[in-house]
Image 1 (tube, rainbow, N blue to C red):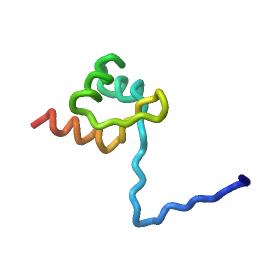
Image 2 (cartoon, rainbow, N blue to C red; image 1 turned 90 degrees about the horizontal axis):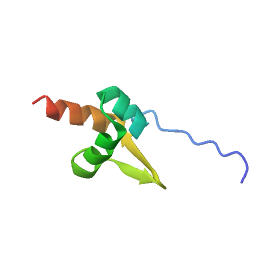
Image 3 (cartoon, rainbow, N blue to C red; image 1 turned 45 degrees about the vertical axis):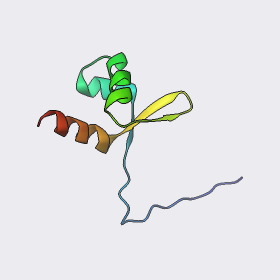
Image 4 (cartoon, helix red, strand yellow; image 1 turned 135 degrees about the vertical axis):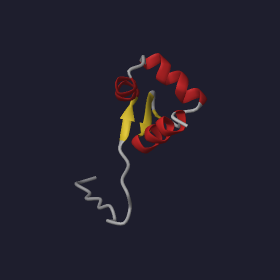
Length: 67
């Protein structure tokens, strides 16, 4: 396939994807709790068997909890 360069438009905001472990560490909860949150109220998606959460979704979730 060769080397393919992909450029992101400067007007498009790139969001970072976090692992369950990273989210759990940040929130100071167990990974199991994060999996439960992903099933209930924290937006997440799967890549194969891995679960990822957008950093902005994590921040939105925290803001909602503080209301």
